[in-house]
Image (tube, rainbow over all chains, first blue to last red; front, side, top):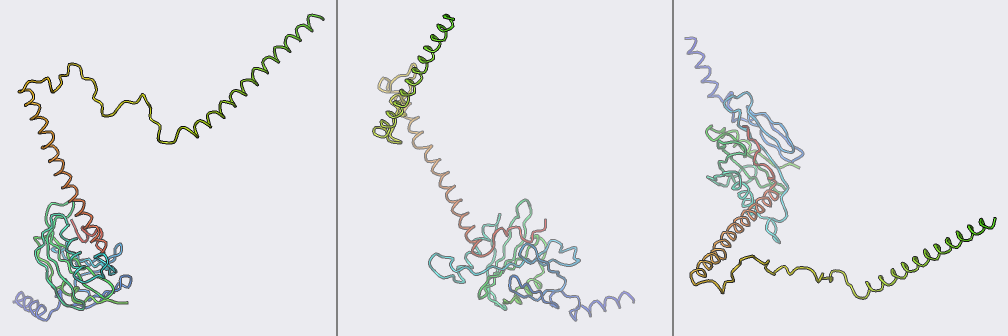
Length: 175
Length: 131
């Protein structure tokens, strides 16, 4: 009876969204790189060598999952003599991803959030390792900057799609 | 007393002789230096000097017991031709292939590096990788 009550309480909590990972409660702002995101629950943010990294808090099953956010100024030219277009940036990003060690690009799809962009899904084998890793790479095209949101985890572990989507769709340019 | 004067006189003469000899040599050296500088400025230009004793780099070294191609039999000529043909066709083809592969790889790598700089993704391959 007591066990049944506990199960019922847990069910109600999950139905109400308490403890869910997709509901953002805080905002993470990176003034140096000029963006703001809604920080997904269950993830903590820290800055390292010019980029921000989100890591799951106290989750043993996801201890190898990370979300990295990088920002860079839009270059004036990607193709010589012509002003940069979104297509140029998408092509250049794809070139970089295809050059990753043992890279296999599976999908590439456009999306809309606060900023529009393109999402790449691929697997690769990091240097010095033998097992494949998943990489979900969202390229967001701001007015003056481009943003890269990079979800990395071992290929055989299910990703936290909701948290990744939260970061991707809520990132907005600031400053 | 007389012998002392004699000794001093002969020593003085010897000293004068040595001084004349030294001055003469000095003059000779000065004269030579002037001649050398004149010669070098008129006849030798930098980089044009060819040592007449230098060996022609394309000349074959004498090979003891070598038989000229013309003196070979028809069978021997055929064997030599096969080796020469292999050297001229097989090896250059392999070399060309290796060069083409290296060029393609280098070109691809340059494209990757350029794309990394353009998109702000330099050295990000290991970003977020937790081993």
